[in-house]
Length: 148
Image: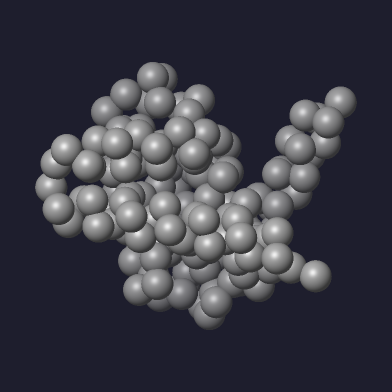
């Protein structure tokens, strides 16, 4: 029963985000292709267009929940902002575009752990982005528990 309430709450949250996207002035400056949603990632608000079906995936739902916690429902200067590093988000999108059926059920935490693990053996710039991304998730989790 609790799982049903989680799904209902997530759908309500996604409706609020979609309404916010439609109201944002940036949506008029940069129209999004039909069947896609524009999201802004990271502190520099890098714009990505993702297939709308991705909004139902656990990894994107996890990022939406983090955004809800961080921004409290009020997105900064319009648009749908996600609180992670653009490099991490791009990596997630690449995995999903390569083999969506294989990665579609992974949660945000699983992607994050996989990213940190793979980047520890690879490129330094990827490792730095992974550290910043995992640190931002820890900060968000801490902030959630420290709130009065």
